[in-house]
Length: 263
Image 1 (cartoon, rainbow, N blue to C red):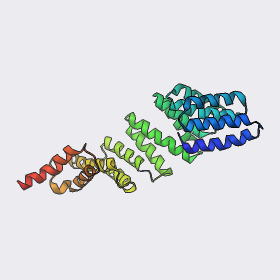
Image 2 (cartoon, rainbow, N blue to C red; image 1 turned 60 degrees about the vertical axis):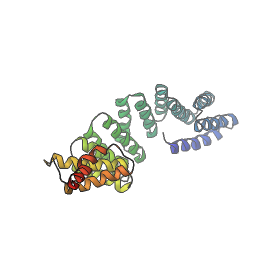
Image 3 (cartoon, helix red, strand yellow; image 1 turned 90 degrees about the vertical axis):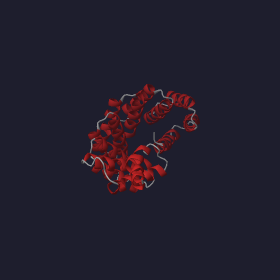
Image 4 (cartoon, rainbow, N blue to C red; image 1 turned 45 degrees about the vertical axis):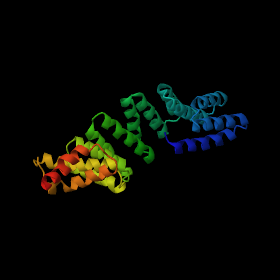
């Protein structure tokens, strides 16, 4: 999941293997890591398995389970990955990253409720802000896929207490507010996403659409050109950035009005 986490795992484990006084375990682990980074996951699995059979130190076993689990996940052998992450958790239940890794494999396998259990555990523990950030991100994504938009907003609110500079999460909260019909708030969320990422085409398009929705849901079923000016600026900018999905909205609320006026 996280390249930084993998590199930290490698460093710690090599130090432990050096204390054994054997060359073969060190070479096995280095070879396994090299195979993993090269995408040779089957070979990496064989390397980590052999190392676990060679060295019974707890830290070695734990890290081999983690990296073998990551390898199984890349091969879409999710149940095997989940089993390895579970073994790693049993060896060290204080490592929140293993709960995130298992949650991802559970997500990939379609076990969404079990994935949420892992992520909620990390959030409730509240002892590692980086892992909490990751857990809240995935909870928001899962809840959005389940149509639980109020939960999405709660997850995003917690997330922003840790990281307030993520345009994607503002976009996700914006779409959740859209689905709940709170267009004023969704416009604010999209605006924040655009502030952080000025060429965020989906946010620009969605903000324009939300502005139209705000007008029409407030009873202005046939807004005039002045009313739709701001929305049309967003829609046309999104079009210029490559979004063709909003062509109909531009025609109905922007171009067609201009054509009528010229005629």
